[in-house]
Image 1 (cartoon, helix red, strand yellow):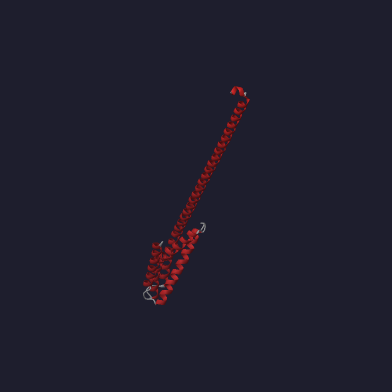
Image 2: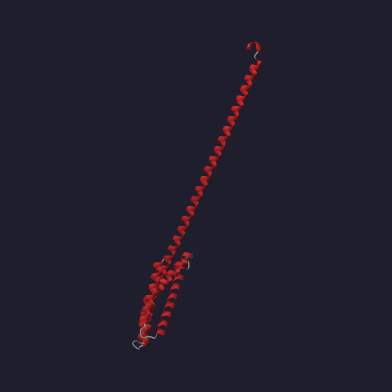
Length: 206
């Protein structure tokens, strides 16, 4: 991100310097007015093109961040291609080097070049946003799938634990029943032996 912001800053500085130098025989005030108006016009045009290219695309927080980066990247690019050339023609017109008709024709040519650039950028912006939306959608699906898998694993572990607990309780119940049955059988056997002993006549035992 830092590299991208630094690159955008460098492009803007280069664009401003080129326009400033192209207006070398104009006053500082005229230079500042031309630079400010040129950047404003390029920003408006680039923003309109971006809006047109993404009007049918669902915008997200990531898309908004991408919008700012893209616009501030292409504003100086468009400015570097068009504004310094028009500035030179404007200076020649002010100096009497060319007529108003020539200036107008050069402006029309530069306008056509800018229009072609904006059309290309419109297609490019749309592709970028579609890729961003696709990446976000894929990421959300992946997170949702991971969450579903985790919940399924937790439910499976809970079922296994419940089954183990149920089996343990059944085993303990069976052991208790077996112990009870064994004790009852032993008591019954002892009782029967006592009855047999009591039934035997005493003279036999002597």
